[in-house]
Amino acid sequence: MERVPAVEGLFTEEGGAKLLGSKCATCGTVYFPKSASCHSPKCDESKIGDFGFGGKGTLWSYSIQDFPPPPPHKFDKPYEIYALGVVDFPAGVRVMGQMSIDNLEDLKVGSEVELVIEPLYHEDDKEFTSWKFKQL
Ligand SMILES: [Zn+2]
Image (cartoon, rainbow, N blue to C red; front, side, top):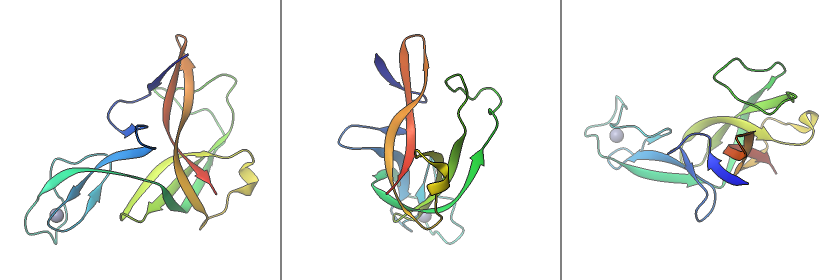
């Protein structure tokens, strides 16, 4: 089955799972998704460049999506309850994403998680992928 990103340009699987963001060379502020300029009020000069990051982070918070999200969200039927996690990465950015976990009761704020790229839904004989967080 063909494996394609659910949204282009937000992440890559080449050389390991990475989110594609931006970083300001002047102040070090990291942005995800990419930003065309630096928005930090403390920054003297916006010098934005591409910045990929991934690996491990810390689960800051999560919520349980216990009802099917409205369009344009897509999911495989029948709907399965999942958790949305908010993860702090050492690069200094906080990112939201679906949790990859078998038992939602095992979720624990403060846990170490790892960025992974996994199937999000299937359509037209294709597997659409997105980033998720796997609790370690
Ligand atoms: Zn800056």
